[in-house]
Length: 502
Image (cartoon, rainbow, N blue to C red):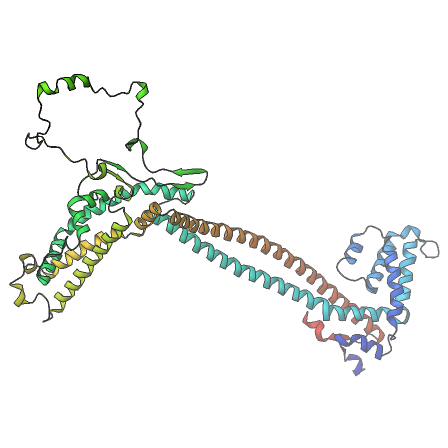
């Protein structure tokens, strides 16, 4: 009686071996089960419509206990085929009752359900869990990729917006917007000229310093272009070279291809003077020189001295200028717009900046080797003698203000756009690439969202399957424990091991 109260513990992974060792089942049980499976498949072809039968046949492999439940259901659905002797005339019932008898012979059903239980515990459930883990990992990987792509998109968008903001364009029709900016250059150069007026004292100080140190003035001035801009402004290169204003200016056109347009000509043709205009002499365009014969006949009579000096007569004839006074090509460009002269102008500003930085350092250090020591100051010009640390700092600040204006990244972009078609192509392509990266990153993120949604749906579907398999496995565990308990006088039977880790 004491043994009757002790439960029988069976390792679920070794259940089939336990059944064979205890001679509940034979080793050749699989051969006979094949015949039963064939009969089940045939019987399933003719089944009544029933909700519980549909549930039994969903999700897992049909087993002996399912067959018993189907027979119970058929007792209700096939009740009208029952005769006086309690037998059913329905072929459905006969088929399933035959299946039950075949299962119970030599306990074939125990071997099969034991194998099913082991397969579920060892393979089915772990594989479903691994599948969920892989899908979760894929989902996490997609999440990380989405974050990376979002970061790349944000960075590209920031760079694109920063460049557009710096250039002051919207970034839609990039090349056209860049070309349209060139018209701002004259206004920018006017601002530079205005700021250069504050450099007059700095240039005078620098020139006086060079004269004091070298004992002579520098030929053409120390910073001639800066001095010229202060005095004359942003004139044409022609005037800078020849010292006189041109009679007319024919600035070279800036031809930049923009999509379907062949070129954009930034020069207003209406303001240009056409010196190549031909006069049609056949259309009444002759020049009336008067009666030449009359002049020849009366020449001697009038006795006019044609060798009279115009200067003696008081008539002043102004020169027509160099080569006719027409500024063309690079000579038509203003000095701040002319790439070479502009570079020289910037170099001279940098020269001034370096000088005043060094001068300020000398004043602050109060070195005995200072070039403008007290013993030397008596020989210096007043502008040098009266200079202080504050005035030197002020002149340095003025130079740096002009430098910051002319070296502003946007100004340099505009200058390069005007004078280098290749540069505008590179700049346009750079902005387009930034924009394409933004669009591409956005598209990839949309695809990732769709993939994540698909994976989420797969995970949910596998979870449903796993839940169903676990549920059926627990049901199978319960049924097996009950069947084995009957064979041991209702002694408790417990399946242990992996069955408890589902």
